[in-house]
Length: 174
Image 1: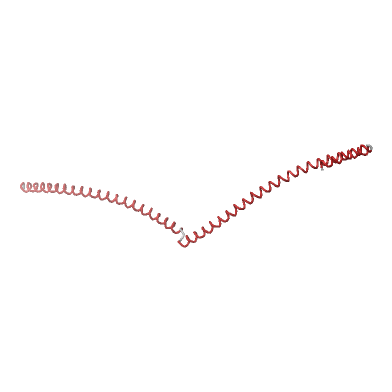
Image 2: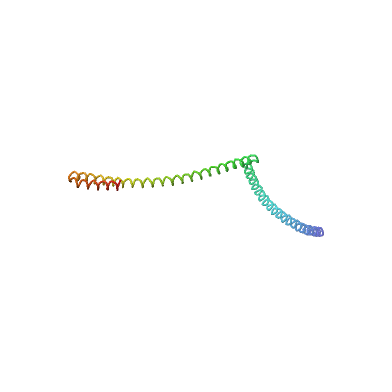
């Protein structure tokens, strides 16, 4: 029995030893697998980040393409562009013609304005002369009235002298 017990103990120790070796080997394998799993999780996380960044860039490029397509859709076709160029040329010619007419009309206006100012100045001078002449006529009429009044009061010789003065005076101012 002791022998069986010794044998059993020996086998038990050997099984324990093999079990410990196997346990250590399995623990190493588990540690390696855990490390490998962590590595794969990290690689997967990095791949997810790259995938997200790529998706974001792809979405950004899609929006840019849509924007460019709308822009290109709004651009005129070759036919429309040629038509617009023709219209622009015609409008440019019309603008030049109108600008020339405006320039001519402005020059006529300047000329007519100067002519009008000259005529206004001449009319003003004539009005001033007329006023001066009217004053002189009134003054002379007053003198004539006075002279005629004196004429009736004076004698014949004096009247003749007064007549000579009157004629001379009338000749000078009329």
